[in-house]
Length: 266
Length: 330
Image (cartoon, rainbow over all chains, first blue to last red; front, top):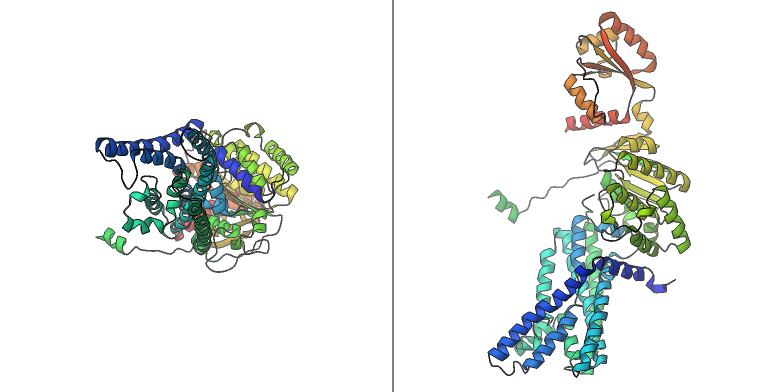
C-alpha cells in the first residue's frame, strides 16, 4: 500500500510504537505512574490548602476548580513531550547519530516521529478518558478534541526546542544538564504542577513569553471551558508560529553544528 | 592546582588522524584497509561515507562530495561498523527491515526477494522474528549486515565486520561478502584486524600507519609470492653473525627466535597450543624457494639440525612486523 507523502513516516510511526510497547507492562506502568503520582501530590496540596487550611478560593479558584484542573492537566501532561531530545544529545555524544545520518531521511524528523508514536497512542487513550469524564462533568467533548490538538502542537514545539538545544552536544559533548534544566522550567511554566494563574499577575509575562503554557495550561483551560474559542484560536495560531520559528532554529543550529560531529565510538 | 587550571583553561590537543592519504578505488573492487589501532582506518571510512568532513584535501565518492550527504548518495552507500549497532535492540530484526524498506522505498516484491536471499545466504531466516537483544553476537552481526544491504548499495564500507565472530560465523560472512561482491559488482571497502578477512576477500590492500599510506597493492605483493620461511631448530644456536657467515644471507633475512619469544609469537599467530614444547631456539630464514636446499646444505655442514619446516610467508606475519616497526619508531 502506497502512503504517498507519508511514505517512511508511517512506517517510522509504526516502528516507534512497536519499540515503545515492546514491554507492555512497563509501558502501562510508566503511563499510569507518571499520571497518578503527580495528580496525588497536587490533590494533597489542594486538600491541605482548602480543607485543612480553610481557604475557600485561591486566585479565584475553588477546591473543585483545582481538582478539575489537576485531573485534566494530568491528561495533557502525558502528551507534553518525550525524551527524544535526550536521545539526540546522547547520539551526538556517543556517535550513534552516524546510523541515522546515512539513511535518506532527516535525522531530527525521524527521531521525532519514532518518539511521537507512543504519544499519539497515549493521546488517543487520554481522549477516551476525557470523553468519559465529559459524561459526568459539564465538559464539551469537542473542546476536549481541540485541546488535545493544542497539546499535540505543544509536543512538537517541546521536541523542536530540545532538538535545537541538543546541538550543544556538538560543542561541549554533553547537553544533558541543559535539557534537564529546560524540562524543569517547562514543568513549572507549562502549568503541569500548578495552574499558571496562581503566579502573580505582575510576573505573568514570564510564562506568557514562552511557548510552554501552550503544552498543558492552555489546553486544560480550554477543555474545562475556562477560555473562549477566540482565545483558543489565537493560541493555536501562536503554536503554529512557534513551530515554524523552531523549525528555522533547528535548521540553523543543526546546519552550523553538524560540521563539528566527530562520530565517536567507531 | 593543575586540575583547577584545566577547569579554567582546558588543554586542547589536536591530533591529525590522517595526514598523507591519496588513492582511487575501482568500481566493483574489494579493497582492504589495514593498520594498527589508531592508524586512521575508521576515520578514513567516516570521511568516505560522509559522516565527517576532511579538515583539508578532498574526498570524492560516486563523483560527489560525501559530506554533502545528498539523498541519492545515501541511497547508494552503506556503512557497517562491527562495534556499533544500527538495529533497534528491543525489536525483532524483521521490524527494522520493514522500516528500512520504507525508508529506502524498496518495492515490496523486491524487498521480499532480497530479504529471502540474504537471510538464506546468512542462515538466519528462523531468527527474523527474534528480538535483536536475544541474538548472539554473530547472529546480530549478520542481521546488521542484512539491514545494511537491503537497499543494494553500490558502495559498502565495512568496519571490522567479523569482530567477535566465531570461526564458522566469520567464514560464512566472508563467503557471503565474496558472493555479493562478485554477483552484484558492489564496491566493498573493508577494515579488519583479521588477516583471514583481507587475504580471502581483498584484491587490493591499503596499509595505513599513523595516518599515512605505507602500502597500496595486492596482498600477494606484500607477502612476496615465492618467498618462504625456512624454520630450523639447531642443537646449538650460533650467533646471528655466524649464521650470516654460514649461509651467506644478509642479517635482515634471518630471525632468531628464543624459546620464550617463539611461544609468544606462535600464540599471536593463532596457534594457541603447541603439542610438543620446543627445547631449542629456532632460526627463521626468509628466502626464495630455490635457495632452500643451498641454505640447508650450508647449515648441515657446520651445525646439527634437530628439526626443520618450511612455511609460506603469511600476511599476518608481515603485518605483525610492520606494526612492531611502527611501535619501535614511536
